[in-house]
Length: 193
Image (tube, rainbow, N blue to C red; front, side, top):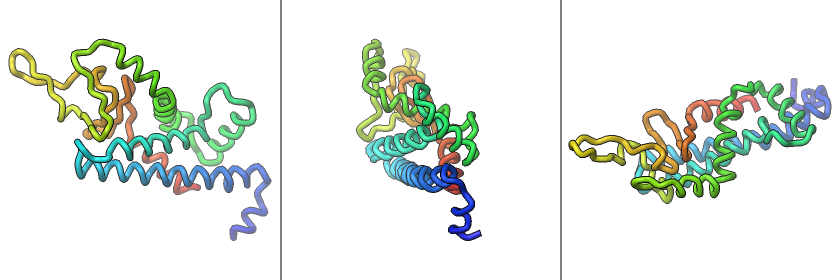
């Protein structure tokens, strides 16, 4: 079936969901995946001083935007909830999608980053690691020397945000998000849109 015949066979609502929303979601997925690739290239090139966090934050913001289309905030109007349900059904996005759990975590942390930072900074710690401005403080870069001379990773609560290379996880404050399932879902969506 050619595009014209396919469009003619759709009702208006399906056309809007597939063509209008689908095009925007496809664009957001493209931008998110491009930013993720750049973050990984930056990390591989120079994990300490590179542009990793710049690209990672761009990725996370675009992934959060995709999440909003399928899983809007709980207090939205009926039309928004119906649109999200219809998009999830049309593009086969289950409730257990990484866009739901990880997407919500990311959205909440990014949208309320000032409050998260206030909470984190107000709790006394032996030292604090922010992890922004190009720094990526995975556990392999930061070690605490114990009195007996052994070393250990710092308490995770001392680090505001970090990237763990071994399991491809980004942590914000006290939450961690696995990137691989999120990237896989964005790639899947891009291929069906």
